[in-house]
Length: 301
Image 1 (cartoon, helix red, strand yellow):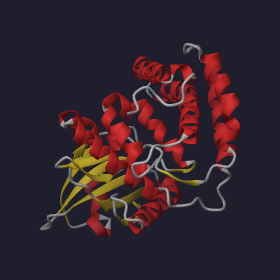
Image 2 (image 1 turned 30 degrees about the vertical axis):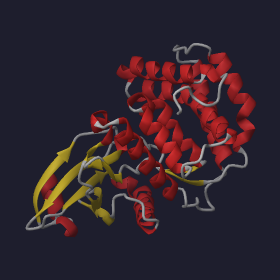
Image 3 (image 1 turned 180 degrees about the vertical axis):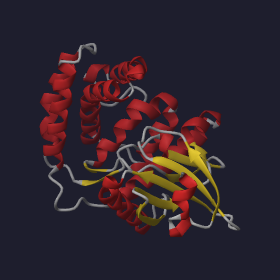
């Protein structure tokens, strides 16, 4: 069926081979396209036709990333055929950084983090459209929904009242935060490496708009457990080698605290069989912050 569909897409109708990519939690179908007589490979996403307008925004974001010099997928074509939506981009050669980084020296891990932080900084040049509501309104509304769901789900995290109190005490910090592009899934699993260097950033399909510091919570949940040197490097690279100040760490801690409840509910709704693993991740970053009695996590530096 995919070969029939691909023949209907002008940009890739002359393909030689199609290989399905079965990785990640996206509902999109993903394929690696080998073009006839061409050394280049292309990346094809197939999605539901009703998602086309949202995908056009993602496509426009990828174009904007090219303007900012971000090492990311280059958008090539988007449209609909045979009652399916499609997007075609360039393909970034290399390997999943999360799977490969354990073979790197600590300095190489740190250097990769520096490079990742610099790419993230480039992304955050893109301001949200005027039609997007202020960040703090949207974030508080989402948090309250997740918290209500958590309180009724039957799963309990140690010292959850202490975490809720910390959030309430720091809510106001979000009020003046900028409304910028968020990749919203920026972690080692969405970075491609080649020859121990960053080759590119992938998977912009969860993009959002809001406070750029919110991006760093994926360090605390995922990357920190894989590579502390990378995680420190990403922060240092973002701040061009400087130490982030208290405002960064307080906001980072606020978002990590809010993430406790959203992570439980997201896992319960999406991959409930992974709940024990997620609770272990939550316990780890809560310990990093001593249940938010400290702002800067123990692992930094």
